[in-house]
Length: 95
Image 1 (cartoon, rainbow, N blue to C red):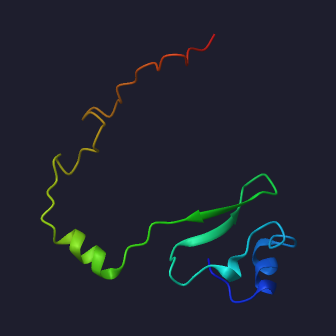
Image 2: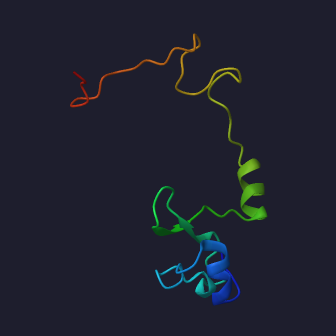
């Protein structure tokens, strides 16, 4: 999230966040979706970018003629009986 000034960075992310690299007041208006977040359970701060779709992008997606390939009451990748087909991944055996 872009902020207006350095003082706001400390108010939003905590004291010392800007000095640790979270320069949210310097995020460009040309980079929508960019933000700094605290990594849960640590004092680390990470720069992240969320997907950004304009209203025009969403309209294009909804009118693109995409069709559903599975019945509406079936989640893709899960059999109709609701029991996923689980396979042991090599190297993940537990004792």
